[in-house]
Image: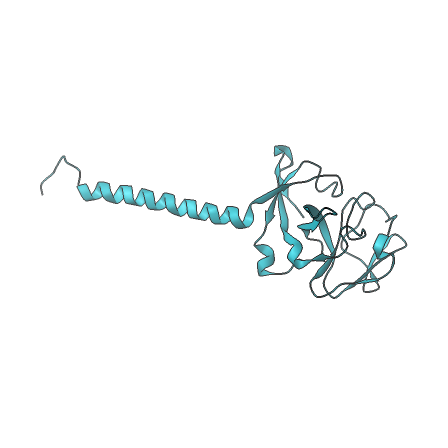
Length: 186
């Protein structure tokens, strides 16, 4: 066998091509991840205290609801038009699902005439708003509430009312900023 001090030219080309291919794969995967899992928005107001605080930056999974429907207690981001026709983003918790009947009476939430279980608001609900009477949700409608139940503009108000599936941008899955609050959102 003969030893050559010159490197094999194909070896160098192979290394460079592999390196370029690896970078392209990483870029494509990063773009996919950002497009579907890392849309972000900033929390405005205190309606989701103590889970989300004003000025928290949250990441939104927008792919989730293209695969399956929102579930009860999911924290979602949705858009509604204000009185000027401008789109406004809201972050709230899904309480009632399509086809269900929701009502607030005696400070409690009732779904299909049964008191809501599985999520406990810290306070009794003072203002039932639109939900003082039973609200029947259509096949693509959701009823949402803020966790800060007595300081939230949500499905009890005319400005939001029922949230349609096509208005939902995605599920909030993580607080991304400020650094000391980074965590998964439940």
